[in-house]
Image: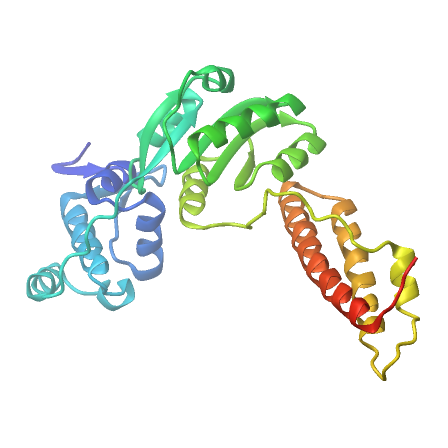
Length: 309
């Protein structure tokens, strides 16, 4: 784009040339005044070649360990001198993580914004074609756009995630019953649901978050069965032992509380899918702790020679 006699570039083009994300550029601009772009009458940012060179220098220095706050106000010459005299080795480029996409519109958005550390791999037009594909490659992140979510969608998404071995999934949907979205969040580990419409920046930010954070871990294994019934715990909470020890009563009381919280977590009303994911985590975690405490109580019961009906 020509701005008078000066060639200018939009923020998307600057992001591609510098390797910075658009949100990163805006943040450096607003917080540190690292660059001051021109503005069109509609307030669109326009950057010159000198801005691109400056941002590239800033990025190179931050990759070598310099904080942006300590170098943002340096001149172009000072930045170049510091980079030339910096003896620290350049940070090796991190391997790009592979992404599998369902939805051509989402794929076009991601391919047009290659400023984050994800390599676009396989692309499927819709969930059905992805599900029916004879094979899919492994991926670090799966991004799916679905017009609607139905109960049968859960098994299709879960199977696709299993085949790709992706630890994280972003699912963008337009219409769904809240119960279906909640059930999907509970059923698939590492899924993040986004209700359309979302902006390009929101989608890119969520992809970056998902590929860099582990999220809430949920054990997909079975929930351990209870070793004691509520009546048996009630008996143990009142039992008298042959020695002056109240461990059976204390353990029984703790187990009554854990059992109650386990039940509460499994039945708690979910306001949204994120709540569902948290409650599933609490439910399974509490169940594992409950089983450990039950086994401890079994040892005490055997040692004390206690009989429960």
